[in-house]
Image (cartoon, rainbow, N blue to C red):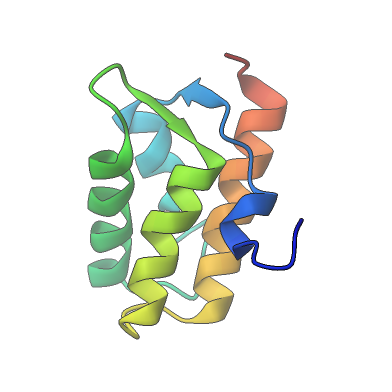
Length: 97
């Protein structure tokens, strides 16, 4: 990272296939307990919108989308970390490019 690097720079730009069902399972209240049902829906919609038309999403795209929600005080820093951890675990354990 350089002097003017962004926090997003630490996240991979490698795009992974992720289905709507995968996102819904991962972001459910059962997996990220700090999210209420309205926040779960908002995070799901945000991640689905961030996905390309090819159904692929990178960690950097996810970070940028979820971080925007945190900056609007829609979700907490803890929520943001939980969502990104869940996505990172999913991508590293289940899918490659």
